[in-house]
Length: 115
Length: 113
Image (cartoon, rainbow over all chains, first blue to last red; front, side):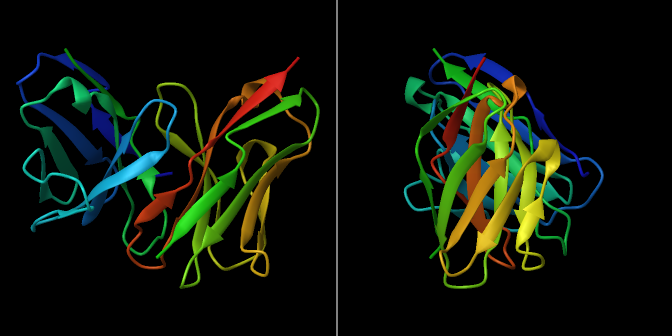
């Protein structure tokens, strides 16, 4: 099946710094990618829909200035957690799917720990 | 709006026993339904999906699920549990076009030797 690569898999940063997470579709083009957040022992919560060449669509309650999303190409979306704080520590997962096929492939996730 | 309810946050079965994980959905449009498995500190792996074809869907690792419109259910089953099946399982629903996926709260499966 299709492959979605997420990088880095684990990142530790100091409070106040910004962290960028990359999501790549390796063998297909994706005009839309999705970013999820998962707290320990909880489900995945959709944060935003990343749209190639246009602004991301954020879910209610998600701060768009805090979580910057850029989808500059058909194979790459990035999520930047700006001025990270300990409460931003979480597992972030992206997904993407080939056009015309209603299935999403998920990245392996990025565990963010903010000290 | 779409939603998913997974009954039981934890399910424990003995090795070799039947696995039944329950999922009910709500959708105003014909849904696409999925079951994913997640192992600790890993991403999600698709087990199976329903996309309006056969109501009984077979997936990987011996899992299957049956779509029952009258009950708005999509329960996941496996005839005989294996120790390697211990993981978190998520039921999910998406609409037919946007691929926006809504996840259930998850059910953690424990398999006892």
